[in-house]
Each structure stands twice: as structure tokens, then as C-alpha cells.
Image (tube, rainbow, N blue to C red; front, side):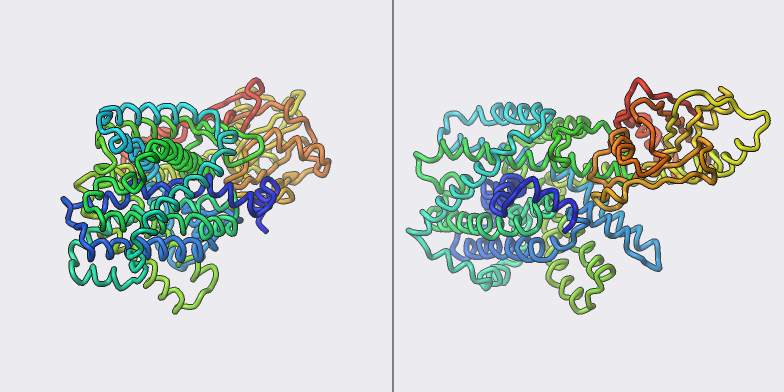
Length: 640
């Protein structure tokens, strides 16, 4: 069992507890889709889909089979098997693709780039989800008390302000309430649907896929356009995969098949039945499905549920950002851990306030969930398609699955995803440009940092020179260099080169501490690195000469606390090189000033963007949790 899953099982004993936790975190987004999905279907394209028996049966059949094929079959049954040491999500697929051996590096680079674009689209999705979810819940006021319609926007904004202000405190305490609230939410969804189906059960015929086929045969153009709104019923599918590391595949699968899937299907069936009986219900079939006495309590419950959905997406953005930083696709950012017990709970201020500004702009700019629905879907379908492609590549090249199985996957998964994506292309001019613009901006930042980091690394290696040659020179130097009392730890990205701060100390100060430790921190393509593989030492050719090298390896989900990790190794007493008090050592950092003046390499605008990102990177002292009073920075210039 992967270490991440073992740790999760230890924190959440029992399958029932894990399934309950998954309900509270994983299913918030897809679980709140009934608030707006069918309303969006019948409002799209100026009401092209009518409240007739043929259209309603066709739409409900499309909804049922879309959820079944995309979520139940593709994600829960297949894609969730593609874990990276227990972790899931599109970033995990990118890490797996990095392990694939291909004869043509350009294909591998293209696959990684596609994965990064999927990550970028996730941020666009993360901006729209809180806006449309909370707005659609509060819009129930228009149904319960039409005279109070003017308060919908102010209440929505107030709820969102409170949500983002609370992010800094973490979700550990609030998270304990998420599961029971979502159980109540899904029970309410099912109860509302059952009440309608008990009176008008005819809609159950829509379980047959032939109604979807007949709908396309009768109205091919309208049916195709409707897919752009039907896809709203599967928003949040990526969350099932992305949160796999927190709960494990089986608890998520159980929660889906036992609770979420039947509750969603029953509610959508109930809404469809209501529309058949009362065509005017297309204005808000979710709330009109309820009796008058239940609408106000449901508004309160729906607001809680949408806050949970929004919280899950925001936390997911924090987690993805952290993984991107540790995998080298973003510069160091200020990342705060909000829980001592759960590694995955982090807070990234820069991401939080960027999301906050975008969400407020979306709510004010679009003004209603129906209008926001026109912008929603393009990011979701893009991510779904990229997930399918990367999964099939992993299945073929890492797992060795036969070609016929891959061809079946292309037919079943990629074809469906392409249809949904094509249907959403019509939304681009009506708001769909927003998530695409966000995705393009984030992708540009990710790819620019990746390319710029490679260029800086190459230039830095050339400037630093080989480490073993430096140590040999120190041994043969005459007169010998002055050795000062104490321990100095020099952080360096490579185990083969000499830290610039060490060279500057020799050339400018003409003295170095009696114990010199060059420390390289590596981030693996796996979320967690086992304890026995965390540390590697090298005496650099000599024993007891005061020079040594230590490599610390972390997973991209591990907390980067260098002094704490070195202290654990010291207490273990297994390595001589790590036998010093890391809280009394002096840490030397090499400050690199990047100058973008070389004519070759990246375009000039990209170099400027890279330099701007580098200047705003978080301090290595904070990022690696170094004691600030024991950090010394020495610098040099690097030209790219």
C-alpha cells in the first residue's frame, strides 16, 4: 500500500469514516450541480431545448448516461487506478508521464505541456465554481420570496468574502462538519426527487439510452448544443481523482456508488418529471421541485453545500499550486501549513487573493448563475479530455496494456470528451473566453518558469564549476584557507557543482567554517519519499576533512522542513555527515540576480516574465523553514 494511503488510513480508521470524509470533501462540486445544470440546459441558446416529452426524455437520458460513462466508468472504474504513490489528479498524471520512455522527446514534451494546460484550466474552473455554486444557492430567494430578489447579489458577495477571509485558518476544524452536512444534502436531493417520482414515475423510462439517440436523431443541432450545458452535471469529476490521496480509491468509490450517484440520478429524474408536468418550472426546476415549506431551509442547506464545494475547489487550487512549485513549474511561493496532522492542508495567500478577486469579478460581471453557466464547461471539458489522453498513454506505455484496449478507451472516452468539448466551443463568445484566458495565462507562466529554470540551471552550473575540483583545490591550497569555528550549510541545487555562496566566501572573506556541508534538496516525481530513502551522504573523496555533501529527497506532497529533517537524522546517529545540530548551524544561500541580456534562448517577453516571477519568489529561508536568524545570503549574477 502506498505511504500516502497508509498515512490516511491511520488518520481515518474504518471504511465508513473514510467514505464519510470523502463525502465532505470530494463530492461538493458535482453534488451541487443539480442547483443549476438543468436550468442551464433549458435556458441555453435562447431556449432551444423545449419542455416537450421528447426533449425532456432525451435530456434526462443524456444526463444519466453522461454521469454514468464519465464519472462511474471513466474516472471511478478506470482513471483512478492511475495513481502516483497513492496520489491522483492531473498533476499526478504529469508526474507519471515524466517516467515514460519515448524515442521522440518532442512527444513527451507535448504530453507534459498538455498536462500543464489541463492544470491551467483547473484554475479557471476553480474561479467559476465558487461564483456559480454560491450564486445559484442564494438565487433560491427569488423562488421563496420574489420581493427580495434584489438582495441576491449582495448576500452572495458577503458569503464569498467570508469564505475567502477564513481560508488563512485552514479547514481542519470545519472539515469535521463537512461529511454530515453533505450526507444531509444528498439525502435532501434524493428525498426531493423521490417525492416527485412517486407521483409521476414515467420519467424513469429515460434510463434507456435510446431516448438520447432519438433526441439527436430528431434535433441534431439542438442536441449537440445542449451537450454544452449537460456537461455541467459532471463538473467536479476531476475532484474524485485529485483527492484520491487523502481518502483512497475504495472509500471514494463506495461513497460515489452508495450515496452520491443514486442521489444525483434521483434528483435529476425528479426535476425532469416536474418539467414534464409544469413546463414553467424550467426557470428554476431545483427549488420548484420542493414544497413551499422546504424552500427556505433548502436555501440554507444549499448555501452550506456550495460553500463546501467552493472550499474543496479552493483547497484543490492550493494543493495543485504546491505540487507545481515542488515539481519546478512555479517559483517558490509563500505556502503556509494549516494543520500539524494533515500534510495536504495548506494555504497559499497569493492564490487565495487572486481567486478572490476573480470570483468577485465573475459574480458582479455576470450577475446570475444562468449567465455564468455560459462560461462554465469549456475548462471542465478541456481537463476531461486531457485526463483521458494522458491516462491512455500511461496505460499503454507504463502498464503495457494491449492496443485493442487502448483503442476501446479512445472510442469510449476520448470521443465522448471531444463531443462535449466541441459543444462548448459555442460558449467562447458568451463567457467561455474567461476560463480559456485564465488557462492561457497560467499555462504561459508554468511553461515560462519551466524553460527559464532550465536556462538558469545551465548557466549556473557553468559559473559554479565542479564541486570535487573545488574540494581538491582547497586541500592543495597554499597557504591553507582559514577555517572558522562552527558549521555552515550551503544550499545548492546540484550535488555536482560548487555553491556560489561558498566561492564568494572563499574569494571575498578568505575563510570558511571548519565543517562545510553542501546540501541539495531534491523533489521526487512521487508525492511521498519513504524515510529510508530521504537522505544520502557523500564524503567528497576525503574522510574527516570538514567537507561533505548531503542530499535530502522529498515528495511533492511532503513538508519541506530542512532543519527538522536533519535533526531526525542526527538523532538516528547513522551518518557522520549529518551529525551536527541543524538549529545551531549557519545556512548560506546563493542569491542569484538574473539578467536577461543574451540574444538567444527564450523570446525577450518571456525572459522579462521569468525575471519578474523570480523577483517575486518567496525566500528560500521561509520555503525550507530555515531559522531566519541563522541565514546568510551571498550573491552573484546569472545572464540568460
